[in-house]
Each structure stands twice: as C-alpha cells, then as structure tokens.
Length: 190
Image 1 (spheres, one colour):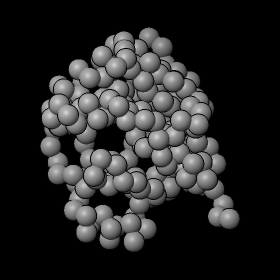
Image 2 (cartoon, one colour):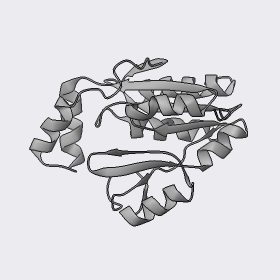
Image 3 (cartoon, rainbow, N blue to C red):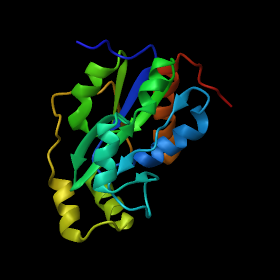
Image 4 (cartoon, rainbow, N blue to C red):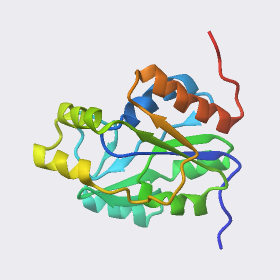
C-alpha cells in the first residue's frame, strides 16, 4: 500500500449540481488564500459561463492522466473531470487543498490523503431547480434528470453539511470555518 499524502488536508466539497458549491468556494477562496490551495479542475468541456476550469480535449485529458498530471479523476455527465497533481504537492507541503469533487471518488481520496475532510453542500429542490435553470447549461429534460439522480456515495459520511438556502455569506462562512479548522488557523472576526 502506498503511503497516504500529508501532513496537509484535502477538503472535498461535494453536492449535486446547482447547490452552490462553486459560489461558496469562491467566497472562501478570497478569505483563505494564505492557508488554502484551490486547484482549477481539468474538464473535457469548452470554456464558457460558469465554473473557471482548465478546458481540454478528450485526448489531452487522457495524455495528462497517463503522465500522472492528475491526482484524481472521474467521469460524469458525459465529461471527464480531474484534479491536478498540484493538489498532492500542496497537501504534502502541509497546505489545505479545497476542491469540488464527485462523491464517487471519496473513497479514493480517503486512501490517498492522511486528512480528508468531506463537506456536503445541500439546498432545497426548489432552489436547486431555479439555479440549474438560471445557469442555462442544459435543457429542461436534463435539469429533471439531474434533480432525479441518486447520490453516488450515500454511505459516505460528511464531516460538515452546509444547507445552502441562505445568503452566500452564510454558507461561505461555514465553508471558511472548515478550511481554517483544517489549517489550524483562527477565524478572523470583524
């Protein structure tokens, strides 16, 4: 068995499409850059509105994976997603890495990192449907399919659950607390 990477921590932000993971992470990133690393996901999707990611072709993704440039990867929604290997370097250097990942890779992450913190973001179905429609990435039938999709890792416990029906600051501050706790840093007040 390979030794797990540490002493830093990997904060895995999980939740269904439309629950606000990217918004919460952007909020927390602005307030925790000194202690946390937020790698850009590599996705086989062209750039466009929404998540800031590294757009690649299928061939580029496969080549990056084969060269060991991805710490972890997974298929979802007809695309492939990956977290750059810079995450391993940062965790190995004692930093906190925060990334939006699929719940399907949580066991793999637990085997890879000494300290895995799972943050599950949820939201009411009504708010989620509104967000998916506003995002404009898919037609109505696709939204219905996303809303009906079962949890791919129902047995994996979350360390923290953020009910993201409130303001961005409400949810963002909860995620920020998790990151700062993982880093052993105090929460600034004021």
